[in-house]
Image (cartoon, rainbow, N blue to C red; front, side, top):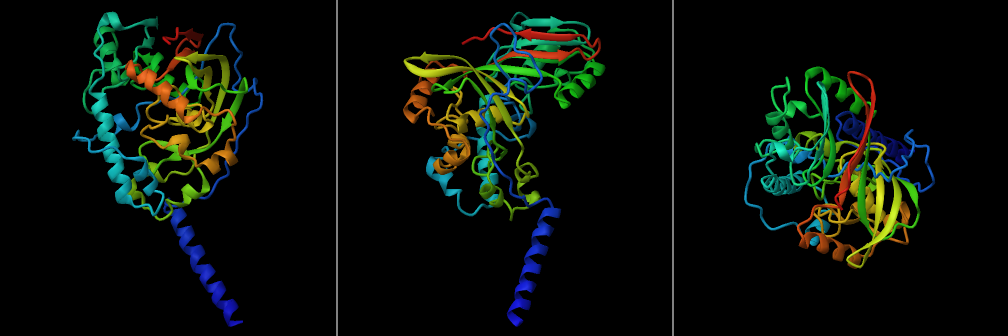
Length: 388
């Protein structure tokens, strides 16, 4: 009887401590992870156009690089694969913050290379008194950030009439510095407010065209894998698993920030094969990617976990700044997203070397956008030619 009473006492203490952690926002409840690769042509509620269009990757959106001020410092040696693996042990706030600051400094140095656009460089796809649709070139930031670097927003505000006080006020969504393609901008406060509502309610349809490593076996499918912030390679994301959620249970919000301790985000990507090709003798697949859920860096990390990373992706691709395979081990890959046709390491390396040697950006382009005009309510859709 004494042993039974003691057992109940210890269980009560453990339960109290865990519930306290949840109420503070410092604990996760484990979640399941699934993959679906069935035909879902009805999903998303759009009709497939007659022309070849390609889809919506939330690719390297300028998030942490621009939203958080970071002093530019000399970048020390890069994190090696062994160092990444070392973080698989006990997780400390000091290690997370150290790596976060180092990576942000590296991202800031890259932002300094943003191109300055002239009026002639601006490709206007559509303009009226309320909005603009612009075909953004690669190599330029959408917004300047704290470094006040050249940006699309600044160039548009300088050369196109608007009632808003700055280019940043015209921005309602972003494309990463390396990503080219279609972007909507507002010209007045009313348009800004209405466009934000459209994006918040996911009423803007975007698709991207991408080249990914290897030949994808099925013509279309869904990747349904939740994502979480990556404590080993911040500020990037990884595929969320129960084990990795529990790794963060003892960390405090005030030490690592709210984003690091957010629970897993449901993330669903739709892919459609356009054509299976070869690049420099290596197999690649031209695909349409649509982010059903619209999570940060979702399409990059999903394609990497699927075994077909975006060609030229030096973050989530092989030997990139983030963990390979979306942060999953070989065992986890087999359990969560089995794929016998994964691009092997040699293929991925050769493809990235081919792109990087020519100083080309990752092979992804914001090809298509469809939305209801925020003021006139007229339905618009636009296509942009892919540069690769």
